[in-house]
Length: 115
Image (cartoon, rainbow, N blue to C red):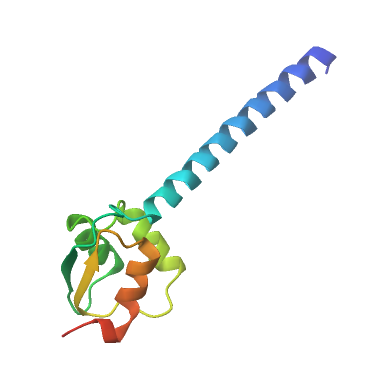
C-alpha cells in the first residue's frame, strides 16, 4: 500500500470514530435528560395505579401517559438496571417534579403502595 492510501484509510477511520463518539455522547445526554423531572416546579400529586402482574413495559406506559416520565424506554432501561425489587402493585402518589430514580424507588417500596 502506498502512503496516500494509508492516509485516506486513517482519515476514514478517524471520521467513523468521531461520528461514533458524537452518537454515544448524544445518547448519554438524552438518557441523562430523560432521568430528570418532567416539570421540577410542579409538585402536584398524580395518582397512579399499578395492577398486580404488570410488566415493566406496562408500568412505563402508565407513567408516560400520566406525564410522569419523559421517556418510557429510558424508564424501562433504568428500572431494569437499578431494580432492587419488583415494582409493587397498588396506588401511588407521584409528582411531575420527581426524577426517574425517585419514581423507581417509590414504586419498589411496598409501604408506599395502597392496595
